[in-house]
Image (cartoon, rainbow, N blue to C red; front, side, top):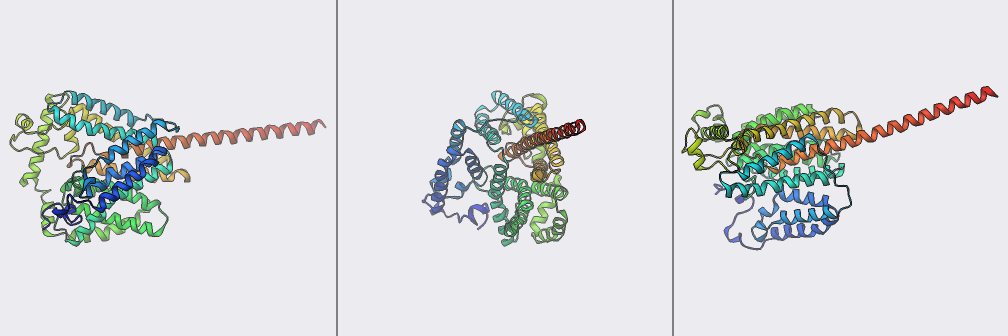
Length: 464
């Protein structure tokens, strides 16, 4: 019964007769989106939040009728751009090192697309990538205050946490016998992909748990976080298992109030692992015996193909180069065709060593900026939330870096939106620093004037 992806059958009741029928889900999503769009024209920040909900939760993909393939995100993006054009708010891009590197990377991807080997496939992928990058820059322009940043984190965490919550419950109910999948027709459909997305989401949920005061909300976030951990393990993705182990280590290392977190991990992790069936343990055991696993050896063959290709082609072969003909020419085992299954080798094959260097540099400077924000922002009470958020963003990015070694989502929206959040935090911290300096200068000036006035009074009294 559950041989198909679980979110299609076990949660959406994937009944054939209902696929083309008008459903309440179609109506709900349509009313929410088109009911919100008029407000987007007045407040583009609402549009960014709506776009994030559509991009990460993909609610329309959970419907069965006309809404399933309706371009809600495109409509929302158009309204955001219109609102941005007419908005009287300042439209400043803080050109930090992250954005400069990202812009060079985007230009390089465009150049490699011009010279791509598979032109039709490459331009189709470029059409997705440039839209993601455009919305990344629009997000930075629009969301430059605390409320907007907090709201964006809530939207991302709850949108993806929705699948973590459902996936965790499903894993418990089925004893971990079936793999967790994401919504069909999206970037995060596959078990590997949803695993990576949930790993990146867990630190965001942790941030909300740290900074939320209401006890019921805190409890709900804590439950969601651990169900998301179960869902990641329930994906039965070996790359996700490696990723969540690395992410979990840094989550404890970077969190405030880490003692309760460590105690919970010591209690719950052995229970979760012990709960999983023998088939899961057998599959995870192949990590140590990868030479005997056809899937793992296929990935290594694809990595060698990407390396050989990049060594002979400075520009790589452009987007979607992991094709049969490419393997015939560059792979050690030409007939063993696999996708990249690694963000690093994906970029290497598609954009060459220069593209990979830019991709790695972007991650490095972003992680380094997180460290600087953590150190500076914790010094003042009013900026401590920035320190907490930067710490969890750093953990999320490290989770992406670790999981991405075995999973191919180099152009995933979430990664670039996390970079955008780091850029915004840097801008907000710089603004706070400037305002503090102005206040200190004003205070010093007042003190100087008072001291000067006191000295003048003493002279006058002496003269008398």
